[in-house]
Each structure stands twice: as structure tokens, then as C-alpha cells.
Length: 156
Image 1 (cartoon, one colour):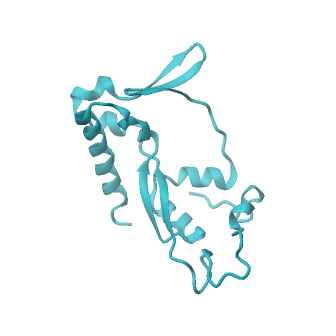
Image 2 (tube, rainbow, N blue to C red; image 1 turned 90 degrees about the vertical axis):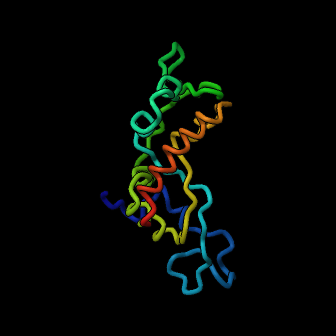
């Protein structure tokens, strides 16, 4: 992954910590007395075909999907209302961080830059999948994600 200029003007606000002046410690990575930082809402970008390639074949027809409708593209998920899909253009550091969601080394690089010591990972595209009222189907989808997440991130 290419490095984006660390002075990306669109993201300078991220480097400001409200109330830092006068604090005995901070979240800044270079602070010798840095707080231990836990990021408790991180979303890993799964491979697009994660569930298609891993789920029990009896559930294939029930997996979330995209549909083109007269009012635009929507994601259809069992047990959840259809979600409109709108492109969100990213550039600079936002684009770099978005691409880093799949790669453990890139995530670690971002965490080092931000002073994050540990993170709790959640699904990204799959987060609405578990709205289904069918516990066995939900469990099958969770197993796919958990297995992939463990295989991908366990060593980190």
C-alpha cells in the first residue's frame, strides 16, 4: 500500500486531541506516558465473496444481495429493511485507511500511527447479516466471518 502524505490537510483534525494541554498523559503515539488505547469499534473489510465461498450451500439463496431498483441500488438482507447503496468517494488518508481494512499489516501501521494498542474487530459488509430471525442461518454466517477473521488477523 502506498503511503499517503502524513500532512494530508483533510485529516489534520485527527491529530488534535481536545484538552491535551495540561493532561498528564495523552493518546499520542510518541507520548512517553501514553494511555493504553483500545479501539472498540473497528470494522474489518471482508473479501467480497466471503460468504459465497464459505457458507453451507443450503443458505446460498438466502445470503444478502444487491438489487437494482428504479430508485437505485439496494442491499437486501433477510430480517432487515433494504438499504440504499450510495457511493462515498474517498481520497487521501481516508482512501488509504479504507483500503487497509483487509490487510493486518496495514491495520497495524494505522494503529501505530494513531496510538492504538489493541482493537476489537467487527464485520463490515456483513454487519446487517445477523438480522435474520433464523438462529441457525445467523450462526452459519457468523462462523464464516469468525473463521476468516481468525485466519486473517490471529497472528496480529
